[in-house]
Amino acid sequence: MAATTMDIVKLSIPITTNAYDAEISDLIDAAVLDLQTVGISNAGNHETDPLLRRAVVTYVRMHFGAPANYDRLLASYEAQKGQLQMSSDYGGADDGV
Image (cartoon, rainbow, N blue to C red):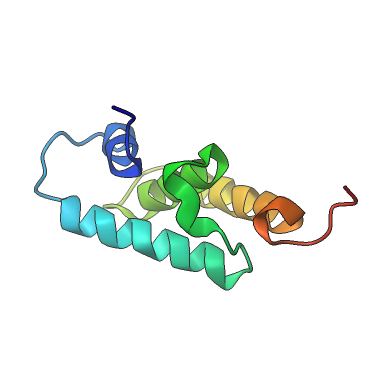
């Protein structure tokens, strides 16, 4: 069985309990909405698209708890989001392809 975005997020935090699943699910939804608000139309495909999944995981890690590396995670997320925005494959600008 393939790992879900929830599974990968929980490994990256790391958390083994299901006690925070509702909060994590809300953060996953917020990440998708954040990507969609900047024009990444297929952000909901994070379960099957590794680039979208990585952006969602980074967003959740950045917003879950109070990570010591918040600034690094923010910079990483913003870079990932920017790259997706620039790609016509993700509903962004025409990249000349």
